[in-house]
Image (cartoon, rainbow, N blue to C red; front, side):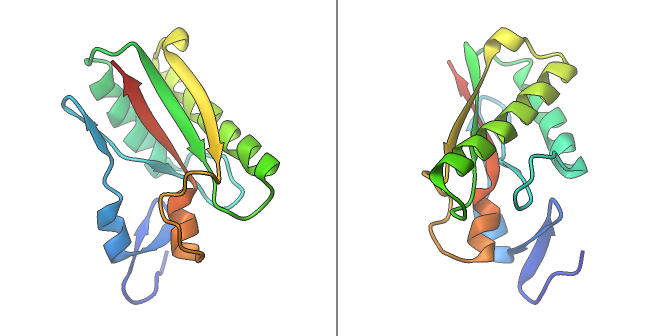
Length: 140
């Protein structure tokens, strides 16, 4: 994918290079848990997202936690109801993939925040790309 000046391609999306550096995920023990990004109005895990999720799962499978919360998010476009459903579909897609990798179904919880918790509050494509995500949050 060809991105404009000052942008980088991350998971098949163009993002400002400064924004890419700001999108490092949270740490849980030895695990780096970066957000998994989605295209506009899409719930499909890209090849890059699947690879990242596989690495995160391998690390998390060695960690102790009670439950793994999969928080789905969307950008601000669309109704509140639509975006809550879209965030839930994204979280459920990640959940299904983790189960295929061997995760215990009872230890996974999908939730959706829709457009209510943006990673970037700006109103442009770069911000919207960061807001279309699923974040993994282990509960000790």
